[in-house]
Length: 107
Image 1 (spheres, rainbow, N blue to C red):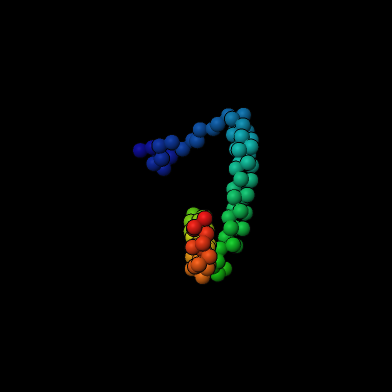
Image 2: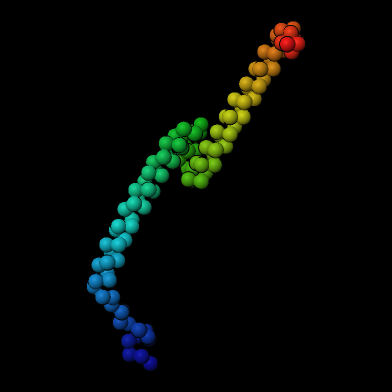
């Protein structure tokens, strides 16, 4: 039996000091742009969340993907309703102006 309490390797391998310093400096340089990008993305998602037509309680529980999915769905529905409303109003307008429309079609 091994005299170190049953463990096979108790001594950790030490990395050279220069490699450790390079790794720390390299990670800091990489994380700063990534962190700034994440912060900007989260800020824009917060603004987008605030525009959604839901209560604060519901908006507070949404994850990023849900925020994007609901925003796209809301914009599609809004566009559809605007297009449908315009088409409906155009039909009503044309129906009310019946004889005038017929005269225009003769030209």
